[in-house]
Amino acid sequence: MKILVRVFFVFTSIFSITYSVPLNEFFPYGSTANEQLFSPNDDETNNGLFSFLGPISQFVPTPFPLNDGRRVIAEFWSDIDTRSSIPSGNKVYYQIHINQSNTIVFEKAVAYVQQYFPGERSFNPSMIITGTWYRVGAYSYQTNLVNTFQIVLATDEIRSFAFLLYNDLQWASPSTSSLIEVNSSSEIGGQAGFNAGDSIIYEMLPYSRTSYVRRLVNTKVHEVGYSLM
Image 1 (spheres, rainbow, N blue to C red):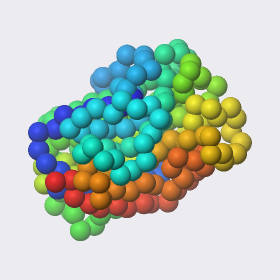
Image 2 (cartoon, helix red, strand yellow):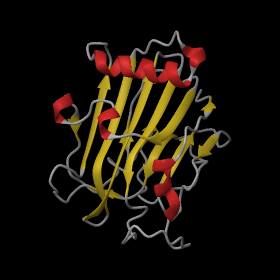
Image 3 (tube, one colour):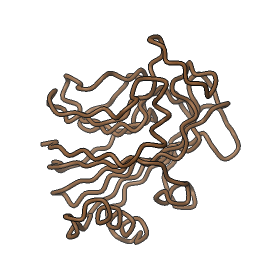
């Protein structure tokens, strides 16, 4: 399951920041922000990542680096299932902003870049892509534990910045049955990180593919830079 983003320019650099934020500090999301809503499903369209140049069909995450040229930004790559209806949740939203009519989104992106990358104060994004996984459950139809996180990708077609924002991670994998962390070789937790597509440059965030991946909610700022050319 994935969000496939088709972009018609080459990313020359990507940076990431991951940390815990309250929902009111997320970039605008949901129906009130006029975002698009993915239909409830358990296929490759909502598995916690952005993919470029090709789809990601695997619901069990593959360790980076991928050897097939695919470029990926993963915040929580796992088998997410939005088929169950729960009050105010189990939804995946997305939006592509290609002009600055939504000033809140563009101003927030600029503020983030200037705060965390002081040397990039001239950054003026021409496009911003947001994806929000709001209180999403795991396969199959599990909603007793839910995760909430957001990917924000901002670019000026020369520089690109990816922000991975975590609000709440209650489950690590579809086999998780409680909030208790019990690491097991049979349990593959969600995967977070980047894959540049050249089989050389990649990054997996701490705790990826383990039951401890929920600790990303409390992770301090983490920065990564690489070329996606």
